[in-house]
Amino acid sequence: MTKTYHFIGIKGSGMSALALMLHQMGHKVQGSDVEKYYFTQRGLEQAGIQILPFDEKNITADVELIAGNAFRPDNNVEIAYADAQGYTYKRYHEFLGEFMKGFTSLGVAGAHGKTSTTGLLAHVMRNITDTSFLIGDGTGRGSANAQYFVFESDEYERHFAPYHPEYSIITNIDFDHPDYFTSLEDVFNAFNDYAKQVKNALFVFGEDEQLRRITANAPIYYYGLEDNNDFVAYDLKPSTSGSQFKVRHGEEELGEFQIPTFGKHNVMNATAVIANLYIAGFDLQLVAEHLKTFGGVKRRFTEKIVNDTVIIDDFAHHPTEIIATIDAARQKYPSKELVAIFQPHTFTRTIALLDEFADALNGADAVYLAQIYGS
Image (cartoon, rainbow, N blue to C red):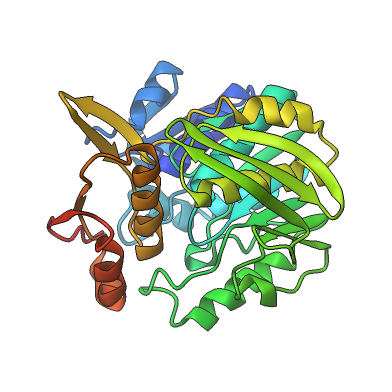
């Protein structure tokens, strides 16, 4: 008998992506949420996944419950009813930790760049072999025959604690989420605990001083631009159509690669993917072929042209990400004036990083500030 999964809060970006992935893998999926329309429900509705209002009648003994992190017994009737009846439920990250045990799993963690890097890794792998994946922009894809599972590994509230992937990339470590983490050292300790859970190989950006401190039980491979890394990107040729570069591993030349994205940070993301797939035994000619066709992920350097103005939408909500986005825009549009319209995200982050935000936004020709989005 096919198991039925019931998602409490199915319209959340991670939850909707997971629901779609399980549906595509042949599982029965349903969920509940508020009536308000969210863009995530479009994909669910197109897939024929039932979205119900919150009601204790949805909770029965024969369904496996997956609950969104925002929902508790004091604010949700389904959670309260499940607790009263003694029914167990898993949070998104708890379920994912169990789910990935059936696959060769590849995680992508990091303070910045993990969504773009997960998207790039998933794009390349799904074009080479049967791969299921979950990306932090709310995108998910499932295959009943997949041997591989690519996922974004989120450090917030240590959600990546249940994950034990075969391989993982860590793009960087930086102080963020000041509503949860108390210091950079607190952030480092969370990532270091995660690193110890990686089974086969760990790939970290070698020019990040925090990542140089990381310890793991699996071999650690450093990637970057400097010669002291295990995988070195060199001969970078940025242009208005993308970035071209070569990669070597020790004395071995791995080839020349091209990506249709901009900025050194995207070259580093691609180098991490190349390193991971090389160590995992993939054909780098195929990797190079599919790197060229990556279309990006949602809300990461998403472009729209209105008359002669190029509007770039990017979820850059940390000073490091703002600098990277401005650098990428300068590479693609070197002759255009660059105007930044920035909406700070959360009061705690804005206060904690106020000076850094000011320095980062100085890279634009003009800056407009919107009201703080207090999530």
